[in-house]
Image 1 (cartoon, rainbow, N blue to C red):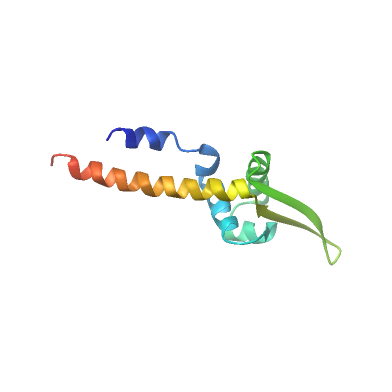
Image 2: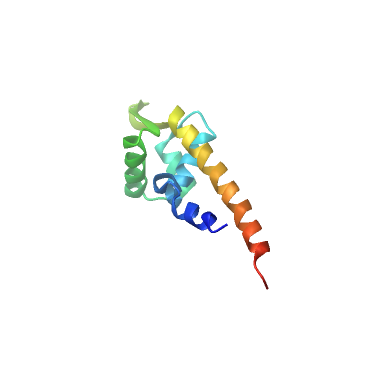
Length: 110
């Protein structure tokens, strides 16, 4: 049962970091989102969001497309198939670990 705690320590840090977990969870629910929407949703600063998106893009979890809408710069972000699978697997792993940790808790003497 101690394996639960070892598994917690072994979670994918790229996705598990709170800001990136928030970004990936949001992107998994939509086809794509613009930068401003993600910034408002997550509460991250422009620089912080940019850095997190760069890490996710480098890992192949998101696709970033820059363009213009009504002559204004616009950045659209979408989750890749691999990113979608990674976030789904991550949430399933968290749910399983929570369940296992509850079983461990019940097995401890009071």
